[in-house]
Length: 248
Image (cartoon, rainbow, N blue to C red; front, side):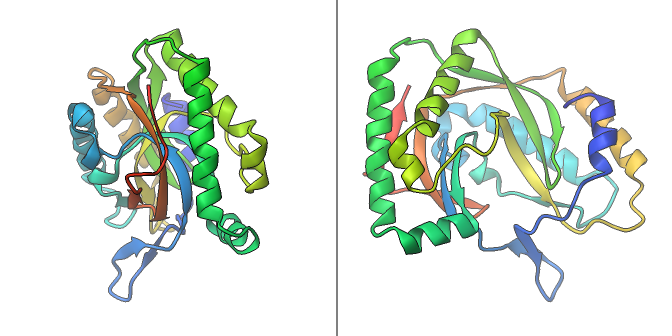
């Protein structure tokens, strides 16, 4: 995903993200996109990994300074930077589930209290979970950085948690199923207005050159906590103090 050939291929297929819509003044704002997810605490609540996120904020600014198009990349608020550990449910599937299943939020929270307890009873490695930034990553509607585990334990602990989540029958009954393989990444921004005359080869070359500068300095994040979080759009992830969480 971080090779020049990958950028060249992916840039041919990038699309405008519907998660951000233009206002009458031409400024793109977050569109409604509700749901639940399992993530690490966002930067605004994760002072332990502040150096990691500060480096990603620097990368984000470098991306935005590329002289391509003012509205091509819509930046996410740095305070919301996080690592998604398990996608759960969102948009129409979430809204339908809330209508069809009484007390949906309470049932989801109860389910994750049991899931996190099950994980703690099953896995007691005590090893820290560290993931290292590996380079720039271009997705169909977004751009970010991808991460790789520093060791086998860091990988296996996250995969074990995901396995417990997606194999849980009660969670399946709430309309949640695995839809993606785990590609560890932190999203920096979404694609906005894509000019019809976008020089895609030039854009690919600029991203590749930027990536070459980044890979000489690969910051690490230590995953210390997983939390059930709710979102109304892609800029804010929130929770109540009594919502389930897991300390590794």
